[in-house]
Image 1 (cartoon, rainbow, N blue to C red):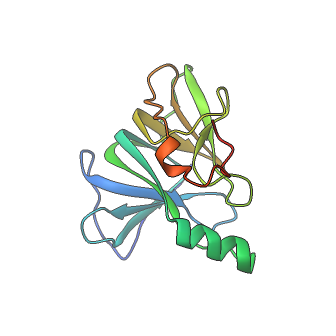
Image 2 (cartoon, rainbow, N blue to C red):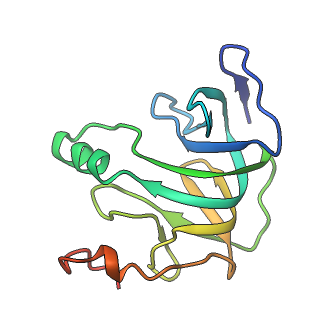
Length: 150
């Protein structure tokens, strides 16, 4: 596992941060960004957050799909709990692929995940505490009826 501070910036447990897959890393690492300033603070192999919210910019997603080019448009916001720790065993995988779904999905239930009490990101995947994620109905988002999520 690796951890690298970016430009000698500091990151502390308890900080409010955004986490996203580092698109420039072959090791599928994660970037940790300050939620307030939006400056990248560090890169790491694995990270866990509490009070997490999952975000997808629809315009960024559509640009990615149209141009078939990777760009940061999906991330998770939360309170930094740990960096490079082993995950607990009772987590459900969360899936996001801009070409296949407009939101993060729980792979067990195939339902959208918008918030979670705890999330763990490692490798190419994110995981939420099993049974603890707050899956919210998104009927209001599916105004055209074409999301096919419910």
